[in-house]
Image 1 (cartoon, rainbow, N blue to C red):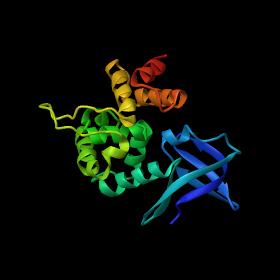
Image 2: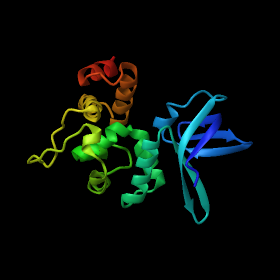
Image 3: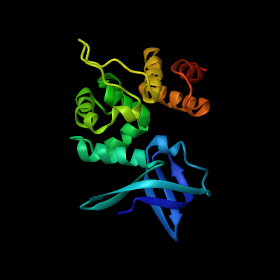
Image 4: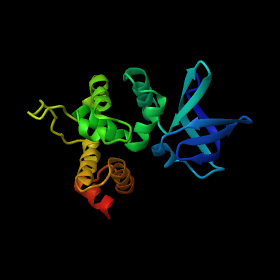
Length: 204
C-alpha cells in the first residue's frame, strides 16, 4: 500500500499533481483544497496517499495531511453511493473543518449546497459519518435537535469556520466560494481569529 509520495513536484492542476521520486513520476488525483497548498513546480512536495484499485485501473489520491486522506477513505468506504470521484469533489468544494463541522452539527443544508451533492446524499453523509467523528476533538457539541431538526451550533474551532461560511452563504455567496474565502482568511489571521474577524477578512 502506498501511503505517501515525496519528491519533486513536476506539474500540477487543480485536480492532479505529478511527483517524481526515484526516477518514477506518480500521477496523483487531488482535491482543489490540496492544490491550493502545493509549492511551485520544481520544489519538494509530499502528499499522503490512498491507492484505489479497480479491475481495470489503479489510481492514487493525494492530500496534504493524513487527516484529509483518512476522511477521504471514510467517505469512500463508509458512505453508501459515494465513490472516489464524488469524495474528491466534496473535498474540493468544502474544506475539512467545514465538512466535519457540518456533519457533526447535522447541517444537511450546507452539505447539499455542494455541486453534485443532493439532499439525500447530504443526509447519508450525516447519518453514516456523524458517529465516526469525535465532537470533543472538533471543538463541537451536539445539543438536542430543534423542532426544525437541525442542531444549534456550539463554540469551537470547527464552528468558527462553519459559522463564517454560513454567514457568507446567507449574503448570497455560493457555498464553495464562501468556504474558500473563509479558509484563506483563516490562514491569514491564524487559529485565534474570531468568527466576526473571519467574516470581515473574507468580505474584504
